[in-house]
Length: 199
Image 1 (cartoon, rainbow, N blue to C red):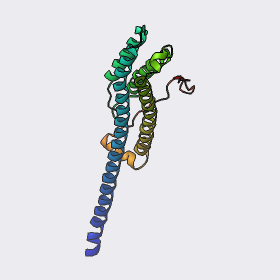
Image 2: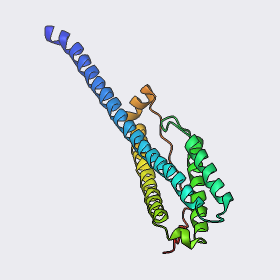
Image 3: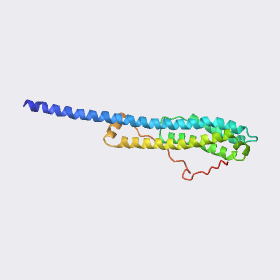
Image 4: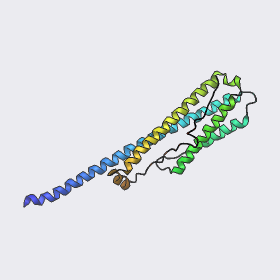
């Protein structure tokens, strides 16, 4: 009789302990994955900032070319200002906010593409070492941006799947872990642009 008196509370305590361990483990796993996504987004922002930091040097180098199209330089400067003014928290961003952020960065990419295309009309500019160095840095940064965006989307995908899987979906719902939005491919991204910097 004494044995059965302690058996039921012992079983209940064991079940409660298992549930607590599952919730704590699930919570910690979600926190780790969420921070991984935030880290990937921070790395992407770092690459966007690197590009934004290169723009003034590129614009100043190009300004030195005689009769260079002022409108093109103004478009690049304005696109840079817009791109650096949009800040979001990826863990709270709606798909629309992420699209706005992506669009502002895309406008800067397009403006830089137009600038580099126009510079081909200025062989004395494209022949300078400073301009060549800036082109190389910008090209490398654009490649790093593409990789960082993919890394962010991969981390967000893994986290989002974890948030939806049982039993972590229960912990996610209890503690308010929301899904992250993704960066979408830009319109026309399936058609790679042809860029000829001329040598």
